[in-house]
Image 1 (cartoon, rainbow, N blue to C red):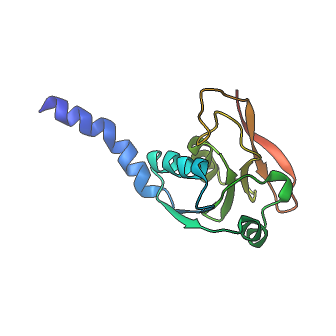
Image 2 (cartoon, one colour):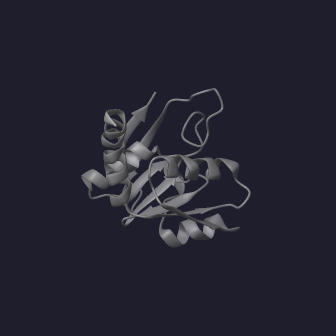
Length: 143
């Protein structure tokens, strides 16, 4: 019984956090495996994710206002922010906790070893915060 209570106590914070995370919508190509892997990463971190498979990602990115120089393969919205590419779940959680005055976060391109791009090799990469005009600042570094 004691072990059961301890297990419940350890799991409770994760369950409580999952209930407070806002829903995320992800636009992706129906044939992109790394996009599906990133969605699985976000779900494993406790996010409720709705996916929308679309053929014309350029149109989606334009409609959402995603700066071209920061683009990757998939685009997400969450709590009024854009999330572009293979941004780690921990960085999205930090964004939601800190609520900075930015448009969103982006990992331009598709760096090896980033969430969804695991292949045994890891490129160093930065997660960038950005504004509507495409101005950027380093939000976090992953080495």
